[in-house]
Amino acid sequence: MSRSVEEHVHEVAEAIRRAARRRAQDPPLLRPVTEELTGRLATPAVARLDVPGFDNSQMDGFAVHAADLARADIAPVTLPTVAHVVAGDARPPRLDPGSVAPIMTGAPIPLGADAVVPVERTGAGEFGPVDGGTLVEFREPVEPGTFVRTVGADVTSGAEVLEAGAPLHPAAIGALVVAGVESVEVAPPLRLAVVGTGAELVSGAVPDSNSRALAAHARELGLPVTTHLVPDDPDLLRDVLAQLAAGHDLIVTTGGVSAGTREVVRQTLEGTPGAWFDHVAVQPGGPQGLASVRLGDREVPVVCLPGNPVSVLVSFELFLRAPLARAAGRVAQRPSGSALLAEPLVSPAGRLQARRGTLTADGSVSLVGAAGSHLAVSYARADVLVLVPEHVTALEAGDTVEWWRIA
Image (tube, rainbow, N blue to C red; front, side, top):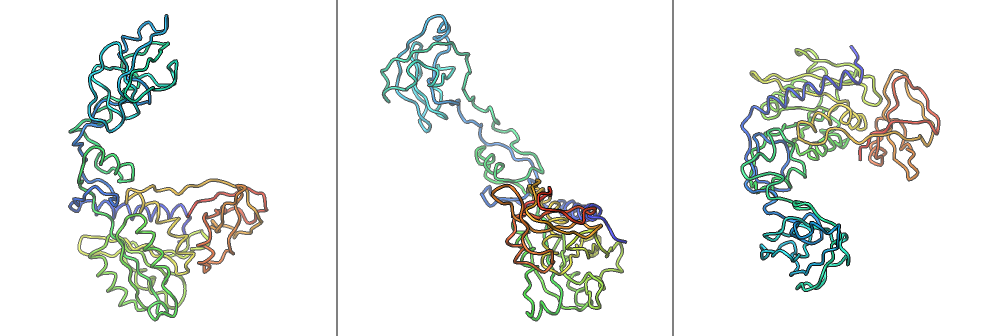
């Protein structure tokens, strides 16, 4: 029975979620906090340092005793400066009442000072000599604590920086570093196997671009992946899938799912429990399959994609990328929007058509290449998918289309 795009999105996502839940039961991995760290935390990360580690200035200005400026709105208050305080300084000397310290953003607040006045709110609007000795006029009072970043305001030592399950994106890496966390326990990542099928790939008569493109997508998400080639031999494919299931959590096949006489994936898996092979209402990428390989009490999903290169890439974007990204702790949804179409197009009734396009300087979207599922070079030149709904069969230049960024 054929499926809508939404139905197949749901079924594939559920299969990957089950695989991710099972993989999460494996022991966590201890990893150093480096810029290469990816995935999700298996256990909470606990701060080893206060953040900030000391009271510091939020602004370029003057560290002051707020009490000295209590009546500055009635009559201007003029106070002498001491030496400048800059970021990276050791703890500066105590600031005596009746004096102010020129201070830069991030610099430590001198003992005794309890507020910072931005330089632009003073009479002269400048700091004066580095060693101090100039006079600064203040014309308004200031509340204690103004523009002071207090020690531990972000997180205190011993407190949780990130909870279990938190994605390890760049901001998370920065937070762990600033909190003094040197290593974390990471949930073991989904392990992918990509299997290209067809004698033409094994012989080299046709380059195996599909496996390499899918592997590149997986690595972009921080997921470990292996690639394999199998000829049109159901027995051999069955053995390979069983071997891969032992060390992988998800298998993605390309080719062999349509209605021809040598559809090796379909012939191998169609009769297995829970397997589905049919058409999804999309162009390109209509023939699809979803099955599993059972190994003891483990069930490893097998997502079966068609063999044409554009069909593979579109299928990845529509059905695989979002759930894999969620499992990997990456942003799941591609940027999307709408734009005016630069030229007319036609689309098959009853199918979501995914055309390739580029966003132009004037904000419109221009099509790249024809609708064929074999035009891999045209796909690589595009930066968006142009999505034409199932009920639309033709659009004119100037009509509004939805786009989904792919590059």
